[in-house]
Amino acid sequence: MIDVVNDAEGVRMALEEIFEEDFVRARVRRESAHASEETQERLLCQVPLRTLSPGYYKFGEHLLLLEEEQKAGVGLSAGELLRFEARGLVALAQARGNFGYRHPACSACGTRQQNRFGVECGNCGTKFRRKGI
Image 1 (cartoon, rainbow, N blue to C red):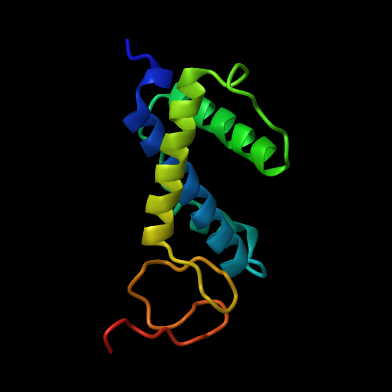
Image 2 (image 1 turned 180 degrees about the vertical axis):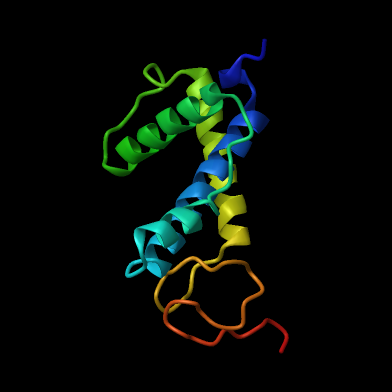
């Protein structure tokens, strides 16, 4: 049996899957705002299925909560933050970085893009300049 909190790679993967789920759900909500209930349900089938044990996602949600508390100014001293939580926060930062690389934000409106190869923002229409061009 794998100890989830000590499997940093698995935790990182679970967090990336959580980010992808949220990204797809937000896109579906935007695209189906005025669609029928049947169409909305069909579009929700695009949400990727989870591939890991539920414990990975539960621990990932715990890490997201810790991160939220830190951003809100709740300081955690070295004695309060457990070693596996610290390693988990590192995995969270890596997962955010990977997700941000795959889905860069538009510099004009901040909307995450479907992929990093788009030529214009799917939300505001801003044209993207490629480096070296």
